[in-house]
Image (cartoon, rainbow, N blue to C red; front, side, top):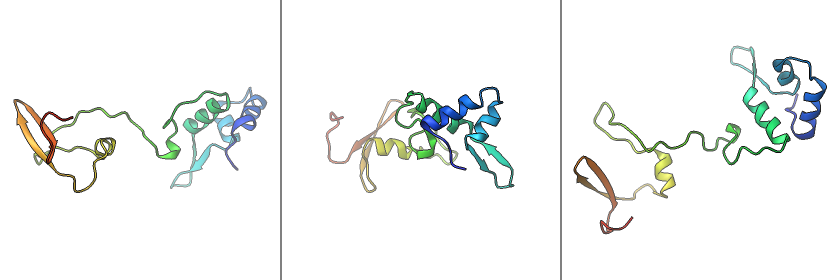
Length: 124
């Protein structure tokens, strides 16, 4: 069964108005099979499709089915057990950094600054 969307989804929800939430999600096709063979109801995908059918946009990255952005960047990290400090891919992508880009490490009073190699300290 395919997952209903748009007017078809709204019609199905209206048709099954007195049914349980689980029954509505199942009848609308928002289910999958787990590795152990049991059924999984996909409530999040159902509610996102329902909101979209009603004209409510969750904005870019609202749906996880597109594997788009998920959590917001926190701009915080911690020193790992081996003493390394990790700057994640999301941050380097946001800055447009590519493999091979080089930086100078500038140490200040309880701060670390990465300055692109060959640029002046004043540039941002």
